[in-house]
Length: 344
Image 1 (tube, one colour):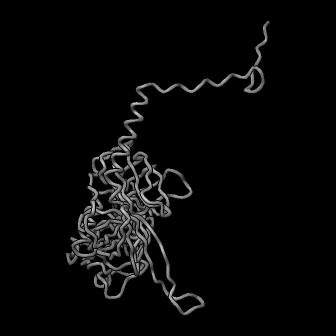
Image 2 (cartoon, one colour):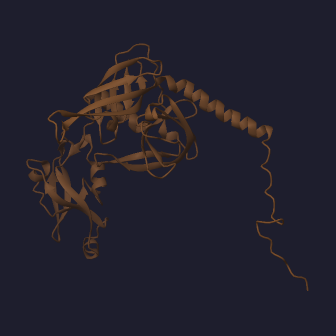
Image 3 (tube, one colour):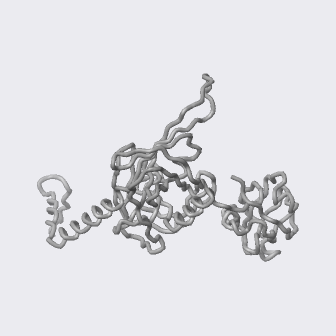
């Protein structure tokens, strides 16, 4: 009877690793085509990508009576030839001074045209001539796996380029204001601090997103605000300096509903928004909303949580009476509420 001998990966009997396959002419052509696409997009977009440096006076120091002068930096891009620049809200929010540096060596002071922390977008403007504007694309036409290119100024290194693919579409991301940003693009194109506000572009050199966040310490989890959202917000900021939204004036938290209540009232949701505070002279106070009420429906649409309520509080709701269904103790009540315009 023959005995079988097991060979380990070490020693004279170890199997040698097969040599890497030699690239074929077809592979080389694909790599060259990929490189040409990236180069072409960067040549088209790069001249419009800018570095933004900000200063912010924030309160007083703990010992000295002089104000604290904070500095920061980010990226942006020119989207109109008369000096309008898009960037992230968190880059320029409450900045006391803004300085923009162009790739051609010129620089200029800038001022904020409009700022929307709820979508983390802002528009600033400079007074220079002969500017190269970056064209917008259409984020609705994006597909998972599509090649994308991120351009920015991380750590002050001008026009840094990284490439990757669209990892996912339709993500949601929490802004610094607490509101949920919908229709966010996830990509593995590497982003670093200072990339914020820079463009995410396709192979044709069209902006399809604005780079806004990276999940640390994870690698390859980067996010950009879809350009179709950017177009809407930018137009509103240029027109009015802000994005109009409605509000009702409550503070709340998501809470689950008891199963018996869900079954008894045949509710379409199993959770709601527990009212924890009501602002004075707010639409909620005028509608007789109370501490401890649970909001279940707004204008006929179910409200399963705070994010649902935020989605419904749009500009077209201002001064329009709508029914608000609440649970008070164990009683289902319908109130009439007139949302007001959200103050800045």
